[in-house]
Length: 214
Image 1: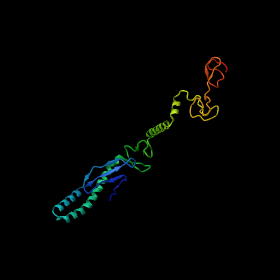
Image 2: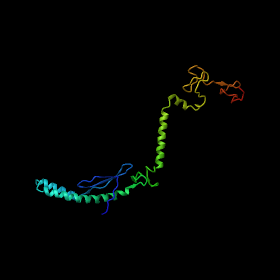
Image 3: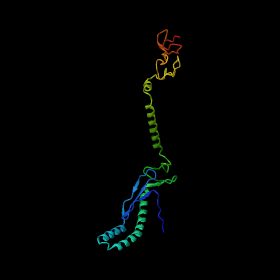
Image 4: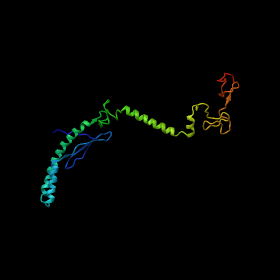
């Protein structure tokens, strides 16, 4: 007697009237349903039930015998239908040699690696997902920046002259301010060249415009 090989990723939707099976992917859950195959014994049993009802139970005993015959014949037909359904579904699925999952060829099988995409993810997809995730993180981080800081970042020379504390009283400074909110001292002292009058950095020893020593 030949044993019937079966798989775990299927559902049996068969009834007394016929046979139908569903095969689904262990990874994404999508799958295929086989066409409905009517059962000859099921139709005979249904006909006997109808006749018994119409004739007031005269054929009741005959219907019972039909059910018993139907049971054995139906099981045989069911086995044949199942073997046929497995053969129909087999081309659409692959069993991963690493995790043993049955996955669909269409979406969950990495052809280049010979493994399912859980065991061998698609690097292009993973990279795109990582980039998208990073973009979202940057957007959230940017949205949390205070409005005054956004204005400061717009300036071309925002890195110049920004101090964390007041040069006079060492009080913490909330932003790029011109005067200390504690003592009123100028945070960034303006200095002009004694020779040509050009504005120069406070720490400059020579004027960048005329070269005069300060």
